[in-house]
Length: 291
Image 1 (cartoon, one colour):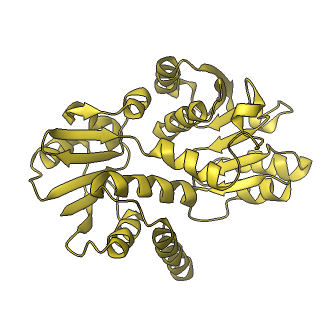
Image 2: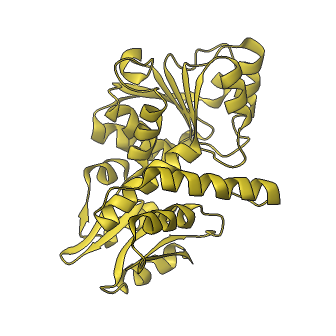
């Protein structure tokens, strides 16, 4: 069986390492997982031309939104967030899923940052979750907050014009959403009572990281979706301030594990995948390679 990850650019993706490690551990010696450079214009032809030997696809932005009209079935989270990062080919049609939400939830749960005994979103009350950024991952973070019991979230945006997708996601999920200006990160404004999820690129939150470094005040739990380079300035500052810090690698690992289960129908070998990914990240760090 065949699978692949699609995007443009795509050469940096860690997904092949994770999926191939899973296949090896599961004894799926006839399974392959490739990198395919594909943009929005080429997605429809690519998806429609996959034959019966294909199990599924992993998608990066902006393909997560573009793929929705090409699917026969869309799961609840993909519909709510307006994007699918996973396509599974079945005899009855093409199925789309959002496993990014599960990746966030599982990463936070594994780190002890979610659940009844944590200082996470369910116990924090309204405004207990703050999300940095307004893209597709921010929409998944919003859905993850809902999965963890939060009634809503604050979203801090560099560009308020990007709030449309977030507002639509909040509406579909029945969540309260408060939009806040980026300047709040460097003012005396409170940022989060329980959980901060940063969905912005490496370096974008450095000003807030400096605030945390100077004040030693940070939310009890911080997830930064960046995984290379790691740790980010935000992760370092938050850890020094006493936060439980979760890396983007944990999110990537858990969303990939969910993809493996959807595509193969078998439990994902999480530890084998984790170790393979960590070895690859260490190799890239030594070689100075990109993420």
